[in-house]
Length: 186
Image (cartoon, rainbow, N blue to C red; front, top):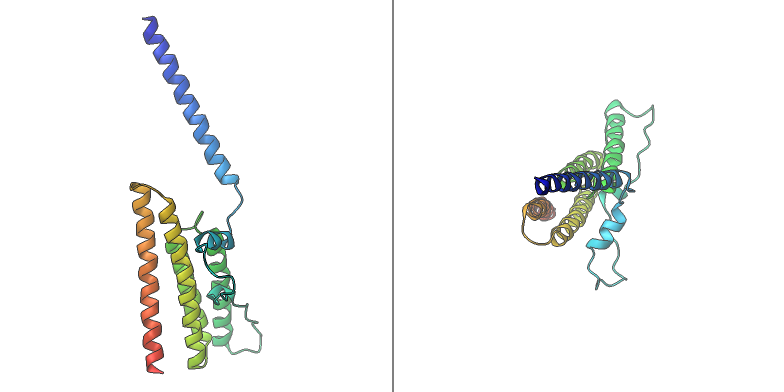
């Protein structure tokens, strides 16, 4: 009888300890500072990369477009869409990979790409936008690959990270093919 009571009390204390510890971890992660894209990209970059390598332009490096009241209605709306998509993509990248899924980041990059492409007037400008899109997707794929490698032994978490990596790689390959086709048409 006494042993059963001791076991019950020990089990209850263990359960309370686990719940308190889990609550502390959740609260700590909710209060933790946001991870920006720069540290995530730094982790994803190989250590032996030469320093003289120039940073390739990304879609999110763009500047907001001025919307003038004298602009035609279509131009005004396209600029507003671009500005909104730019802000959304930047916020998604700042929160990635900690608080945002790669699917949400890829969708925001796609929206920004379409908005900037609509504003491009010349074929050379369109090709430049396509190249910035490819550069952005290459960086996202690097982050997903790093997350996959960090996830360790096979398991549920690793499977999801592997799916994220494959999805980002698929999107990058699609864009690379589109860019090559567009350059061949030129």
